[in-house]
Amino acid sequence: MLNIGDPAPDFTLPNQDGEPRSLADFRGSTVVLYFYPKDMTSGCTKEACDLRDAFAAKRIPNDVVVFGVSADSPASHRKFIAKERIPFDLLSDEDRSVIRAYGAWVEKSMYGRKYMGIDRSTFVIGLDGKIAAVYRKVKVPGHVDAVLAALG
Image (cartoon, rainbow, N blue to C red; front, side, top):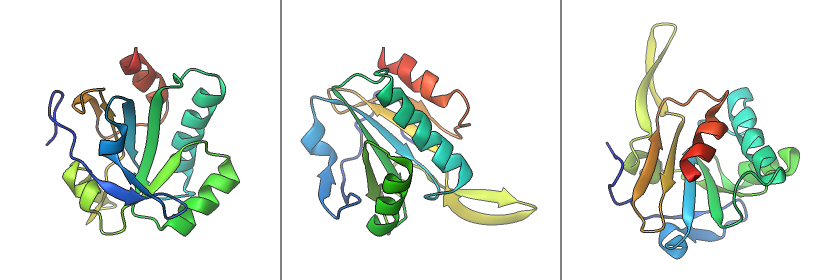
């Protein structure tokens, strides 16, 4: 499990256009890295739109980089971005290697059935590349406000 103060695991993942995005390229910037289960589902759409609206209202500082990560394909991300007007990159982790590195691949349970899935979680990564805030088992209502508070 990653904790506050731990170095953030580096990664390179394709964005919605297939362009590689590496965490190392954003050292010196604050990064909000959030993991979500699936494009165009109700909770994931609400979370992305809350972040979109915070951008539009200028509540997220211009120097903060936001990445959403799921196991969906770049093509799925492109459709999601176009439909919801999302102003930040969505990264595709189809082999779930980064999802696992951040501890977001967990056992879940629904109606008594156990399965593996993505734990909705968010990491704020500081200018030094270390974890500055961790949110696990995120409930979407109010989450953006908690992240904004961590950004200062």
